[in-house]
Image 1 (tube, helix red, strand yellow):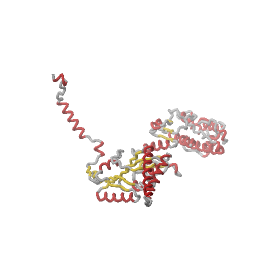
Image 2: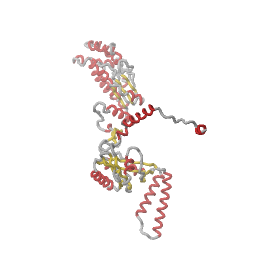
Image 3: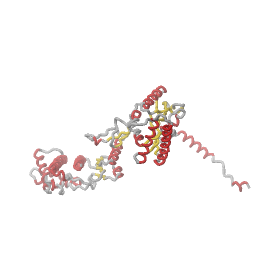
Length: 463
């Protein structure tokens, strides 16, 4: 009868082996180090006006009053302080319509008080008049959409190695802010809540707020550094001296070159990739020479052009290409041709082993100019849009010049021999993309200096 009312009794005793396994698993989990074990202090003692956190003493504060006017960088002395301090700011946007209704009620109260004082013949109250002017000015800016209304909470947590040092730092903090008419209070009997509000968890346990408009709130921007910050540029990281942001634009300098040096595994590649991405977001074009195939994933992610330069690749660069001339620089046609002839002179010397006699040097210079002329290209800018010659054309010109036969024979390795695919075909790459990577990992060792020479000059001609 009881079974029919309450159902059968299913609470059978557990298997002894299962209980032993569960107990063993529990004991094992208790002995495993977790993330909490790593980041938590060895001990914590909460007192009425400070917290002992391991070997540190911590005291938390909240700001309860501000002056009528706040000036830019008023938090700078705290951010740039040479002692350990955590600063936590909470900003709560408020609904403009609701604030306008409250301000209207406040104006009504102020006008009523002012009228009452005048009827009684009392001396005017400057505090009342100033409050009335401030409220009316705020109403105007909110109504015109020039500003918004916010509530802000500001907390500090000081760290020291001893109570004496903590008291000294407390006096320093209070005097530094008090000199700007910004007054703080120690969170007496609320040290735990105030300390938790300073932790990077975004949880305001105290909720001690003050009213701010957009202008006043902007002065509280905490990332201020007189050493490494700039008004423009990209974010490079955090200044470890004062935890402010490092904003910098190296292209505003007279020389924008940069070199990154660090030990293996310290994050050089990551830093450069991050800089490339952030610079690209601000409009810069990125060209990378990748010796280890590190940038392919990044290039694909941003829709860039990835060029794998090797004999087995389909990408080709013709070193005889001339950079296109804008209309306003038509008079520079001769200079561009001369510059490319000089570049080709150096390239062919590398291909031929780097040692040429004075006679061979002169013959090579003459042959390069004649190779261009064979395609109708001269110093006249109107001819420089024609199809440029190839390395095979230079070989033919050298073969036809008395004394150039030996150089022509040595060039055949690059025109009809083993390395003919890379240097003896028209260019088929496009540098119109904003993110371009030249990968030379698969390039043959003997061709690497030649390809590097061509790539760098090709990039320079486009720049």
